[in-house]
Length: 190
Image (cartoon, rainbow, N blue to C red; front, side):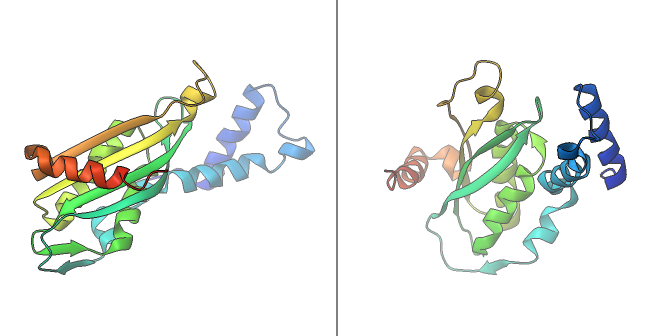
């Protein structure tokens, strides 16, 4: 359960004071409330669950070849510094009598991305969720993202990008399946 908006607003007010700012000055008067609303939005994944999100959008299908959904934008926040990481997620699966409605892939990515975590865990959560709802023979997920905690602070490396992958079922067992997926998601790059 998340904090009520008033409580969260009060915490942001205290943070501004702790930074040496005056939360009553013109430019900051509404900032604690805006920041609280933004944080609630950015972490709304805690208020969602997989079954409600999928909402029975799993359909019978004879399709048994690889299905790839590529370049799903994602916005998340690392649990270490609470700074954003921004990137793209690529998902593939091998249906086994069932396919998932296309928009549900983006919704699954958003649900898990809108929680505090690390990219490695996000990659695993998405793969396991797709496997769980589809019963697929295999699932592959690749995420590539840029992390503000590495770009804005610390080592300040502007062009660094992190890539993570999770391969389940046939994607883990079969080098050919894994290679097909990785080739498909890299073939339209410019």
